[in-house]
Image (cartoon, rainbow, N blue to C red; front, side, top):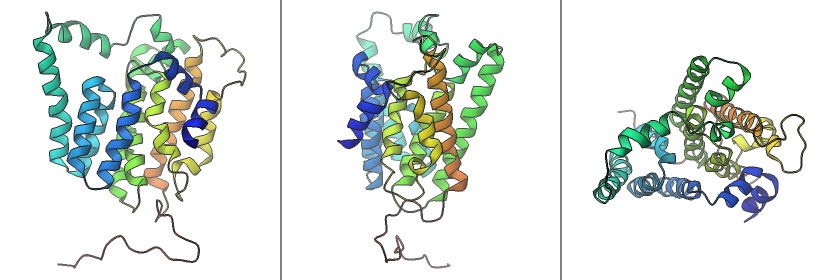
Length: 280
């Protein structure tokens, strides 16, 4: 409740999402639910949740990499089969199922029309507005996204105890995708932000770092930003938030302290999550 209140009062994209009534809200609910199921060992259920969300809107498709990282093949199959079967069933009711490949898919891969493109926050959309050649901007965005996925994999491999491993890996995958995806709007940040905010009680979490909060400053309602106040220029503010958040999460793969993710009562040493394995 406090988190939602804070987002409503201090994070402009939350208000944008509420006013738009966009399907993005399904992803903001599905991702925490899927990670909660995974944290309790119900990986197949997590795959079904992600698959159902992807069937409604393919925003959470990058999360299937988490199942790949974890070697959870049944969950991966569920995340792929649920939207595939739903799409096949929907195609039977369409007058032109091939239109998905001839019109919809090219539309998604190349961004939207010239007016809506002004609101995209990915570097691939923002850098050309600053004079960077589009091909170079796209290449830089792909390189940044690839580095983010690699950092998310390293974060998963670090395997410290506690819930931060799942949350930060999932958030890292989504932020990496937003760096290169077209379109990439400000309210997409709500897919990753609640997961990161939920880490505040845990030592070593992204939300305890200064750069996390610096990234959110441009999104605070009421602050005046010269030259960036117009709606068509706020994408530069959104791009700053997206890039700084992505870098903050990626740094956890390398700088996260040992034992991060545990809440230990004062005066009590942390207990091992399980007994050490035999050496043979």
